Amino acid sequence: MSFSVGIVGLPNVGKSTLFKALTKNPVDIADYPFTTIKPNIGVVAVPDERLKKIAEIIKPEKITPTIIEFKDIAGLVKNAHKGEGLGNQFLAQIRECDALVEVIKAFGKNTNPEDDIKTIKIEFEMKDAESKEKENLLAQKPIIYLLNTASNPAEKCLRLNLKHLEMDLKLEEEISELSENEAKELEMKSCLDQLILRCYDILDLITFYTITRGKETRAWTLEKGSNASQAGNKVHSDFEEKFIRAEVIPWQKLVEAKGWNQAREQGLIQTVGRDYAVQDGDVIEFKI
Ligand SMILES: Nc1nc2c(ncn2[C@@H]2O[C@H](COP(=O)(O)OP(=O)(O)OP(=O)(O)O)[C@@H](O)[C@H]2O)c(=O)[nH]1
Ligand SMILES: [Mg+2]
Image (tube, rainbow, N blue to C red; front, side, top):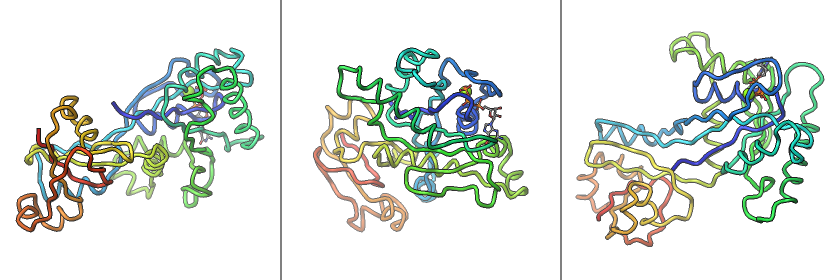
């Protein structure tokens, strides 16, 4: 199962514009509030230079990146927690997400990002205050604030602190409709990869790889701190139970050795048990 990131914010701020640019799914985007009612759901490949480098030496038949799911959720209004504007329904959808990207309007006239952030925060906190469960609280979810600006392209990318990004989502939507060559010719560069990686980061996730005898080189998502048998469970639900041992090598060492057999000859492959703490970038072969 993939991790899901909810795109949240006030109505009409560019949430669906971001979703469309990320997933390339055609969705309704319009200049009036509540264009989105039912959530749009789509998956996005996590950009990964390491996967490319591993694949260059393994030369598999197939390369499969790991994915994150994005959910474009309807806009929240003041008093959403009291049911205003179908708010309760939307807040329940937000509760199912592992992390959030909050889009804040900073294009056009009369914008007030600080007030808008406060409005959403209050709705989360009010809803949490009613909730009997103390887990999964809305206001505790990892969150990235994304200011949707109309700044000039040269300076539009990523400013401010860790949890705070700035992008022109209209421009991102335009770039997403171009081919790679067209974008290059027009010197237009997307910032979305950086947003996806930031989501991965705040979810506290790491990546491990499997190479299944040259057939498929694949990246997998794992919660930081997981052990080898839990990693096996991601590959196949049987693997956690049937786990005997695993062979592990950091991806750089595999690439330097130029292949699994060469790495084995050089003694670079480590045999580990089920309690081995998986490290970001490990290439793992499970023995069941
Ligand atoms: N000028 C400008 N317009 C934008 C930008 N991003 C979105 N828009 C426009 O703002 C309007 C709303 O965009 P949507 O993506 O539908 O907004 P939303 O947040 O999904 O809206 P709801 O689903 O109604 O809550 C559309 O007319 C977009 O074209 C931007 O960066 N600059
Ligand atoms: Mg929308």
